[in-house]
Image (cartoon, rainbow, N blue to C red; front, side, top):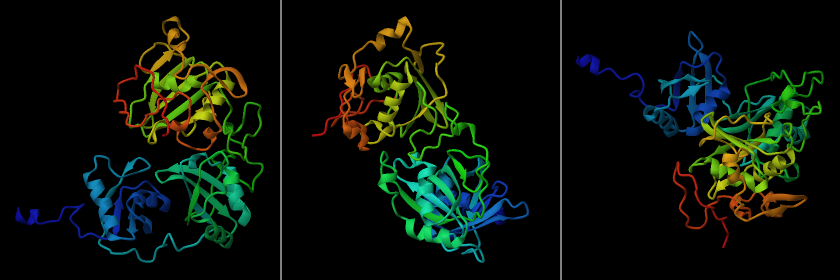
Length: 411
């Protein structure tokens, strides 16, 4: 028994090392995926992929020992395992203290750049804006964009390493010029070299583009209602406009109820129906207006703003493919405001009363000021949104607001 108890446990009792050994990885796991897994804990300086008999093991090396310890300690105590592509990954300290004869991510140049766009509006930067930025240094062959735990990222392929290197040297750590993203907040670029040499682009779309092949088919999602290839460089119209909005709510520290959503969205016109649902671990809602024009006004005014002061319950809004929601029963997750039993709710005056929206006579929307395009927090605006005031207690989870909430006023 003593000999068994003296044997070290498999995972956590090896001497700490800057190098971690990963097992049970998906087939052909990439260097970028390993870096993404380790990035929350520190800077990954080297990797070794696809090792072992089944090519499902790898090594990652951190810049500092305490970074490797932090990753092991986190997953040792977390109820959520480390995962890559949905597969549970097992971690342990490696017997080696460094990875030898392997590419170092920060040093090995290549013709493909991995670009991380940072900023509150990073995900709204269009692929055409990225093309304008990087094509200043040479012909851009291909661009693909995607979202990872590190944020909104892109792979940009040049014809050769020299061109990619000049772009990286000039742009790494710099901000995207404001004139290219006039309607967005500041966005900066963090750039490293990718292990890829040739990107695979099967369709021209909002997510990927091959500038060397004009005959490549266009993805259906990139075609607007008129049948045109809708990829505007302003990044605004990324999908066909609709009278139904899809709202995703991030950083939900406080409860968001149907009544809260109705208060927010009815500031811009009559809300006909709302349906709430959970998807991808977050809350989403479909909001139906009587016409497209009202939905466009609401989307432009609310996108990227927060319902509550302090950055809580941030709204990301896109157009839905739906045009008429099917609400079969009124409950705390869905409501049809057009039927008699709930129509009275729609007739309640807004917090600030009926006020005209500029350029749209007769709309029951709250007053709008030019400040709404400045990227300032939602609580700076005069329309009646349920923002928290100075010293106001936040609503408790699950407790819908039963009385009108006052707008937040700066002193």
